Image (cartoon, rainbow, N blue to C red; front, top):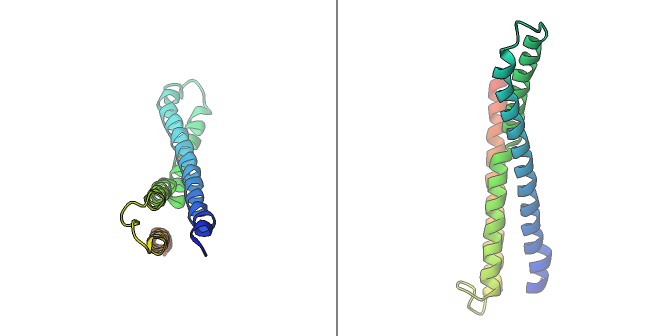
Length: 147
């Protein structure tokens, strides 16, 4: 694979993937957090009217359960952690790309392409290992809580 092919087929593809996944996780994280804030802030207001409306305590209970569900989903899918991890990886890959394109150290030598490939593949591998460890801890936690 020559440098141009690697840039397009591997590096740019990875940058785009991490960028898109970061945006997706950020979107879901913020949606869930805003929903949780709105629901949580409505509970005290609604509580003041429970003596006048007999169904309101049920609605308040459902809202409280909804908060617990949202929090559980957010923790299960780790939207915040993944958003940060994917964004960081995307930015690090971009940084390496720009260093390479501008022939800035460590890419100001004859074997700059090999150095780029080694560093990029190491970063991607490291990120994959981190992701795997983050999600295996989640699985262990679920198994420990179910036994």
